[in-house]
Image (cartoon, rainbow, N blue to C red; front, side, top):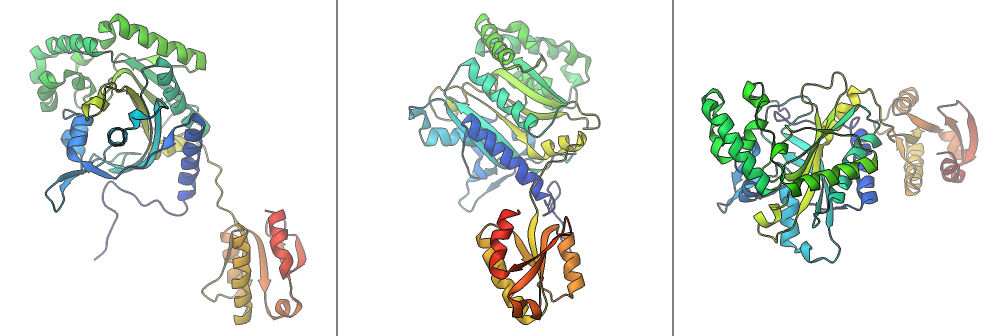
Length: 422
């Protein structure tokens, strides 16, 4: 019987991981610069957390969650996104009591959604996200958006577009909700069953439907921005003014509603405009979620955040033809001829590695020519060959594989030479 990777998942092979490590390093460095400290939460939570946090009318909760019962009969779910878990931790550990507000968090880790596999979209995917909890200042909205833009610009992406919208406050949403129901109700029979179920529960989700997005009523639907209260309009104007100060271009998109129930006020998405990227152009999405903390048992504390898929970031790099500079070089390869030479090689490798010098050797007793080919395939910068003569003399020729230059060195001189020429 043969086994294959489960549908919707992937193996990230050793030749691919340096790119992932480079991206993750950039993400962690930006988190440090912006002061978003890393939080690590469990990969599964109580199912009700996502039902209440993400929203029971969303596609994620209704169709995409991996839910199971443990041996104690408790319903648990593999996390489909990171915000609910981060907020749960914020509440459970009473971070709202910290004198330093807002609490700024970041995370990187696998998420799980049972959805149709597409380019850059998997059922297990790696998400980077940030949350700023404890401030209703429009400036923090601009900071979060700025961090998201910085992520993509730091890896060299240029074909980007920021879409921005306001989902308003409760009064705004209630007025818009009534208008949407009146707009769709006479023709709701023409829509999919999901939209029909959402009409009374959460008509805003109809605008996010992937099945009926071409329906004429979608284009003529009441725009949420037309129902913004004065307070919501002022807030949105302030967010835009801060983005202007930061020199961040944006496009106000009245149809941007996001796919999770907890959003209000600022909502945004970053799109790739690169040719050939694919039909689904969204790279990143986020927004403000005032009310979420209270909804899962905490105080009435506002928050804002975003999340992005590393898989889709790498896909965007490929679409723009950008190769990340990654460090995967081998400093030295030791070719050993004979058992005594192998013992010396093991000793030398240990001394190299103790000083942070990457080193390798042959472990399947190949001939010298095959070992040299191996060193070349591995991209070794230096190669030394140890045989009987080298053991007797206590010295060796070290060859620079990039330049072809060779030098004679005593064994004890090798470490300092390599440190000086890395």
